Image (cartoon, rainbow, N blue to C red):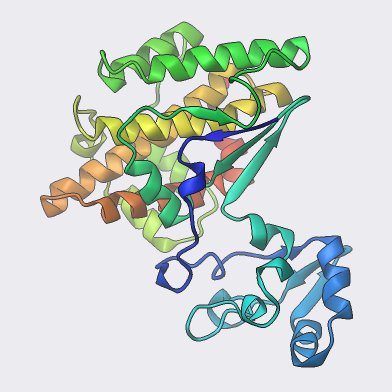
Length: 310
Protein backbone atom coordinates (compact mmCIF):
# COMPACT_ATOMS: atom_id res chain seq x y z
CA UNK A 1 0.00 0.00 0.00
CA UNK A 2 1.27 3.47 -0.90
CA UNK A 3 0.04 6.63 0.82
CA UNK A 4 0.89 10.21 -0.14
CA UNK A 5 -0.46 13.78 0.18
CA UNK A 6 -2.95 14.82 -2.50
CA UNK A 7 -0.48 17.35 -4.00
CA UNK A 8 2.34 14.79 -4.31
CA UNK A 9 1.82 14.10 -8.02
CA UNK A 10 2.00 17.81 -8.89
CA UNK A 11 5.76 17.98 -8.36
CA UNK A 12 8.08 18.25 -11.35
CA UNK A 13 11.73 19.28 -11.02
CA UNK A 14 12.22 22.76 -12.53
CA UNK A 15 15.92 22.00 -13.20
CA UNK A 16 17.83 25.05 -14.48
CA UNK A 17 15.05 27.41 -13.32
CA UNK A 18 15.72 26.53 -9.68
CA UNK A 19 17.37 29.29 -7.62
CA UNK A 20 18.65 26.91 -4.94
CA UNK A 21 19.84 23.92 -6.93
CA UNK A 22 19.96 20.67 -4.95
CA UNK A 23 23.14 19.76 -6.87
CA UNK A 24 24.99 22.60 -5.12
CA UNK A 25 26.06 22.56 -1.49
CA UNK A 26 24.93 19.02 -0.65
CA UNK A 27 27.07 15.92 -0.19
CA UNK A 28 25.92 13.29 -2.71
CA UNK A 29 26.41 9.66 -1.72
CA UNK A 30 26.01 6.94 -4.36
CA UNK A 31 24.13 3.76 -3.49
CA UNK A 32 26.13 0.51 -3.96
CA UNK A 33 24.13 -0.77 -6.95
CA UNK A 34 24.57 2.48 -8.88
CA UNK A 35 28.25 2.71 -7.89
CA UNK A 36 28.86 -0.67 -9.57
CA UNK A 37 26.99 0.48 -12.65
CA UNK A 38 28.99 3.72 -12.82
CA UNK A 39 32.28 1.77 -12.61
CA UNK A 40 31.20 -0.28 -15.60
CA UNK A 41 30.25 2.73 -17.71
CA UNK A 42 32.42 3.23 -20.81
CA UNK A 43 33.22 6.13 -23.12
CA UNK A 44 33.77 9.77 -22.19
CA UNK A 45 31.04 9.79 -19.55
CA UNK A 46 32.57 6.64 -18.02
CA UNK A 47 35.93 8.39 -17.75
CA UNK A 48 34.29 11.38 -16.10
CA UNK A 49 32.55 9.11 -13.62
CA UNK A 50 35.83 7.42 -12.67
CA UNK A 51 37.54 10.81 -12.24
CA UNK A 52 34.78 12.33 -10.10
CA UNK A 53 33.78 9.53 -7.74
CA UNK A 54 35.51 9.04 -4.41
CA UNK A 55 35.11 6.42 -1.72
CA UNK A 56 35.40 6.54 2.07
CA UNK A 57 34.44 3.88 4.60
CA UNK A 58 32.96 1.79 1.82
CA UNK A 59 30.64 4.58 0.63
CA UNK A 60 30.97 6.05 -2.86
CA UNK A 61 30.29 9.75 -3.42
CA UNK A 62 30.68 12.48 -6.01
CA UNK A 63 33.69 14.75 -5.46
CA UNK A 64 32.21 18.23 -5.38
CA UNK A 65 33.77 21.00 -7.47
CA UNK A 66 34.21 24.72 -6.79
CA UNK A 67 31.35 26.25 -4.80
CA UNK A 68 30.37 22.69 -3.82
CA UNK A 69 28.84 21.96 -7.21
CA UNK A 70 28.21 18.39 -8.33
CA UNK A 71 30.83 17.56 -11.00
CA UNK A 72 28.03 16.68 -13.44
CA UNK A 73 26.11 19.93 -13.01
CA UNK A 74 27.00 21.89 -16.14
CA UNK A 75 27.22 25.65 -16.69
CA UNK A 76 23.52 25.75 -17.63
CA UNK A 77 22.65 24.06 -14.29
CA UNK A 78 21.57 20.88 -16.07
CA UNK A 79 22.74 17.35 -15.25
CA UNK A 80 25.23 15.90 -17.74
CA UNK A 81 24.42 12.37 -16.56
CA UNK A 82 20.77 12.82 -17.53
CA UNK A 83 21.75 14.43 -20.82
CA UNK A 84 24.15 11.59 -21.68
CA UNK A 85 22.50 8.52 -20.15
CA UNK A 86 18.91 9.46 -19.28
CA UNK A 87 17.20 10.04 -15.94
CA UNK A 88 17.29 6.31 -15.16
CA UNK A 89 21.09 6.62 -14.78
CA UNK A 90 20.81 8.67 -11.59
CA UNK A 91 21.84 7.25 -8.23
CA UNK A 92 19.08 6.63 -5.70
CA UNK A 93 19.39 9.89 -3.78
CA UNK A 94 19.37 12.01 -6.96
CA UNK A 95 16.46 10.06 -8.40
CA UNK A 96 14.33 10.40 -5.26
CA UNK A 97 15.13 13.92 -4.09
CA UNK A 98 13.15 15.82 -2.84
CA UNK A 99 10.88 12.83 -2.28
CA UNK A 100 11.13 10.82 0.91
CA UNK A 101 9.62 7.58 2.18
CA UNK A 102 8.49 6.34 5.59
CA UNK A 103 8.11 2.58 5.91
CA UNK A 104 5.56 0.72 8.05
CA UNK A 105 4.54 -2.94 8.32
CA UNK A 106 1.89 -2.85 5.61
CA UNK A 107 2.42 0.49 3.91
CA UNK A 108 4.90 2.92 2.42
CA UNK A 109 4.19 6.61 2.91
CA UNK A 110 5.63 9.07 0.42
CA UNK A 111 6.16 12.79 0.80
CA UNK A 112 7.96 15.79 -0.65
CA UNK A 113 10.74 17.52 1.27
CA UNK A 114 10.36 21.24 1.87
CA UNK A 115 14.03 22.04 1.24
CA UNK A 116 12.99 22.20 -2.44
CA UNK A 117 11.63 25.62 -3.44
CA UNK A 118 9.23 24.12 -6.01
CA UNK A 119 7.77 21.76 -3.40
CA UNK A 120 7.34 24.73 -1.06
CA UNK A 121 5.54 26.69 -3.76
CA UNK A 122 3.19 23.79 -4.46
CA UNK A 123 2.39 23.26 -0.78
CA UNK A 124 1.86 26.95 -0.04
CA UNK A 125 -0.48 27.24 -3.02
CA UNK A 126 -2.90 24.63 -1.66
CA UNK A 127 -6.14 26.24 -0.46
CA UNK A 128 -8.18 23.14 0.40
CA UNK A 129 -7.24 20.98 3.40
CA UNK A 130 -4.52 18.45 2.61
CA UNK A 131 -5.74 14.89 2.29
CA UNK A 132 -3.85 11.61 2.21
CA UNK A 133 -4.32 9.48 -0.88
CA UNK A 134 -3.86 5.71 -0.99
CA UNK A 135 -3.37 3.53 -4.02
CA UNK A 136 -5.37 0.75 -2.40
CA UNK A 137 -8.66 1.23 -0.53
CA UNK A 138 -9.54 4.02 1.86
CA UNK A 139 -6.98 5.59 4.21
CA UNK A 140 -6.14 4.45 6.80
CA UNK A 141 -6.32 0.71 6.29
CA UNK A 142 -6.75 -1.39 9.41
CA UNK A 143 -3.57 -3.34 8.83
CA UNK A 144 -0.29 -3.42 10.67
CA UNK A 145 0.68 -4.22 14.23
CA UNK A 146 -1.22 -2.79 17.21
CA UNK A 147 1.38 -0.10 17.91
CA UNK A 148 1.17 1.17 14.33
CA UNK A 149 -2.63 1.10 14.30
CA UNK A 150 -2.70 3.20 17.47
CA UNK A 151 -0.15 5.55 15.95
CA UNK A 152 -2.26 6.03 12.81
CA UNK A 153 -5.34 6.66 14.96
CA UNK A 154 -3.62 9.34 17.02
CA UNK A 155 -2.02 10.94 13.97
CA UNK A 156 -5.38 11.06 12.21
CA UNK A 157 -6.85 12.90 15.21
CA UNK A 158 -3.94 15.37 15.22
CA UNK A 159 -4.20 16.12 11.50
CA UNK A 160 -7.97 16.50 11.72
CA UNK A 161 -7.64 18.94 14.61
CA UNK A 162 -4.96 20.95 12.80
CA UNK A 163 -7.33 21.38 9.85
CA UNK A 164 -10.36 22.52 11.86
CA UNK A 165 -10.72 25.95 10.26
CA UNK A 166 -13.49 26.93 12.64
CA UNK A 167 -10.71 27.97 15.04
CA UNK A 168 -7.58 30.10 14.58
CA UNK A 169 -4.52 27.95 13.88
CA UNK A 170 -2.71 29.29 16.95
CA UNK A 171 -5.58 28.01 19.12
CA UNK A 172 -5.58 24.62 17.38
CA UNK A 173 -1.86 24.23 18.04
CA UNK A 174 -2.18 25.42 21.65
CA UNK A 175 -4.99 22.94 22.29
CA UNK A 176 -2.88 20.09 20.96
CA UNK A 177 0.11 21.15 23.06
CA UNK A 178 -2.06 21.25 26.17
CA UNK A 179 -3.55 17.85 25.39
CA UNK A 180 -0.12 16.33 24.82
CA UNK A 181 1.75 17.80 27.78
CA UNK A 182 0.20 20.66 29.74
CA UNK A 183 3.36 21.01 31.86
CA UNK A 184 5.56 22.03 28.92
CA UNK A 185 6.58 25.69 29.06
CA UNK A 186 7.71 27.29 25.81
CA UNK A 187 11.07 29.05 25.73
CA UNK A 188 11.40 32.76 25.10
CA UNK A 189 12.50 34.12 21.74
CA UNK A 190 15.97 34.95 23.06
CA UNK A 191 16.37 31.44 24.47
CA UNK A 192 15.38 29.93 21.13
CA UNK A 193 17.70 32.25 19.23
CA UNK A 194 20.60 31.15 21.43
CA UNK A 195 19.80 27.48 20.83
CA UNK A 196 19.24 27.86 17.10
CA UNK A 197 22.37 29.92 16.55
CA UNK A 198 24.41 27.19 18.25
CA UNK A 199 23.32 24.55 15.72
CA UNK A 200 25.14 23.46 12.58
CA UNK A 201 24.62 26.12 9.90
CA UNK A 202 24.59 25.57 6.12
CA UNK A 203 23.82 29.10 4.92
CA UNK A 204 25.06 32.33 6.55
CA UNK A 205 21.73 33.94 5.62
CA UNK A 206 20.10 31.69 8.21
CA UNK A 207 22.10 33.15 11.11
CA UNK A 208 21.47 36.70 9.91
CA UNK A 209 17.74 36.11 9.83
CA UNK A 210 17.73 34.48 13.27
CA UNK A 211 19.71 37.37 14.74
CA UNK A 212 17.22 39.87 13.27
CA UNK A 213 14.13 38.22 14.78
CA UNK A 214 12.35 40.56 17.17
CA UNK A 215 9.53 40.18 19.68
CA UNK A 216 7.25 41.91 17.19
CA UNK A 217 8.06 39.31 14.53
CA UNK A 218 7.81 36.44 17.04
CA UNK A 219 4.30 37.43 18.17
CA UNK A 220 1.57 35.37 16.52
CA UNK A 221 -1.19 37.25 14.71
CA UNK A 222 -4.40 35.29 14.16
CA UNK A 223 -5.29 35.40 10.49
CA UNK A 224 -1.70 35.84 9.28
CA UNK A 225 -1.18 33.35 6.42
CA UNK A 226 -3.39 30.84 8.25
CA UNK A 227 -3.89 28.37 5.41
CA UNK A 228 -0.22 28.30 4.43
CA UNK A 229 0.86 27.75 8.04
CA UNK A 230 -1.80 25.06 8.50
CA UNK A 231 -0.44 23.25 5.45
CA UNK A 232 3.03 23.41 6.95
CA UNK A 233 1.87 22.10 10.34
CA UNK A 234 0.15 19.15 8.66
CA UNK A 235 3.18 18.46 6.45
CA UNK A 236 5.67 18.52 9.32
CA UNK A 237 3.42 16.22 11.37
CA UNK A 238 2.96 13.79 8.48
CA UNK A 239 6.71 13.54 7.96
CA UNK A 240 8.06 13.54 11.50
CA UNK A 241 5.49 11.85 13.74
CA UNK A 242 6.81 8.48 12.57
CA UNK A 243 9.74 9.17 14.93
CA UNK A 244 7.36 8.23 17.76
CA UNK A 245 7.54 4.63 16.55
CA UNK A 246 11.34 4.88 16.76
CA UNK A 247 11.26 5.84 20.43
CA UNK A 248 10.76 9.62 20.51
CA UNK A 249 7.90 10.98 22.60
CA UNK A 250 4.75 12.27 20.94
CA UNK A 251 5.13 15.51 22.90
CA UNK A 252 8.68 16.23 21.73
CA UNK A 253 8.03 15.42 18.07
CA UNK A 254 4.80 17.42 17.90
CA UNK A 255 6.50 20.31 19.69
CA UNK A 256 9.32 20.14 17.13
CA UNK A 257 6.76 20.39 14.30
CA UNK A 258 5.13 23.39 15.96
CA UNK A 259 8.51 25.05 16.51
CA UNK A 260 9.24 24.78 12.78
CA UNK A 261 5.88 26.39 12.00
CA UNK A 262 6.45 29.11 14.60
CA UNK A 263 9.87 29.89 13.15
CA UNK A 264 8.54 30.13 9.62
CA UNK A 265 5.68 32.34 10.80
CA UNK A 266 8.09 34.67 12.61
CA UNK A 267 10.45 34.96 9.62
CA UNK A 268 7.52 35.68 7.29
CA UNK A 269 6.24 38.28 9.75
CA UNK A 270 9.72 39.83 9.91
CA UNK A 271 9.88 39.99 6.11
CA UNK A 272 6.49 41.72 5.96
CA UNK A 273 7.53 44.22 8.64
CA UNK A 274 10.73 45.03 6.77
CA UNK A 275 9.33 45.06 3.23
CA UNK A 276 5.63 45.84 3.62
CA UNK A 277 4.57 42.88 1.48
CA UNK A 278 4.94 39.13 1.23
CA UNK A 279 4.92 37.18 -2.03
CA UNK A 280 4.61 33.46 -2.68
CA UNK A 281 8.29 33.46 -3.68
CA UNK A 282 9.25 35.07 -0.35
CA UNK A 283 7.26 32.44 1.51
CA UNK A 284 8.65 29.52 -0.48
CA UNK A 285 12.23 30.70 0.05
CA UNK A 286 11.66 30.99 3.81
CA UNK A 287 10.17 27.50 4.02
CA UNK A 288 13.04 26.10 1.96
CA UNK A 289 15.64 27.74 4.20
CA UNK A 290 14.09 26.56 7.48
CA UNK A 291 13.69 23.03 6.13
CA UNK A 292 17.28 22.89 4.85
CA UNK A 293 18.75 24.21 8.09
CA UNK A 294 16.66 22.09 10.47
CA UNK A 295 14.88 19.16 8.80
CA UNK A 296 17.78 18.21 6.54
CA UNK A 297 20.34 18.20 9.32
CA UNK A 298 19.71 15.07 11.41
CA UNK A 299 21.95 16.51 14.13
CA UNK A 300 19.89 19.71 14.33
CA UNK A 301 16.59 17.83 14.29
CA UNK A 302 17.73 15.44 17.03
CA UNK A 303 19.05 18.31 19.15
CA UNK A 304 15.79 20.25 19.00
CA UNK A 305 13.63 17.20 19.69
CA UNK A 306 15.82 16.41 22.72
CA UNK A 307 15.36 19.98 24.00
CA UNK A 308 11.61 19.65 23.61
CA UNK A 309 11.37 16.25 25.31
CA UNK A 310 9.18 16.64 28.37
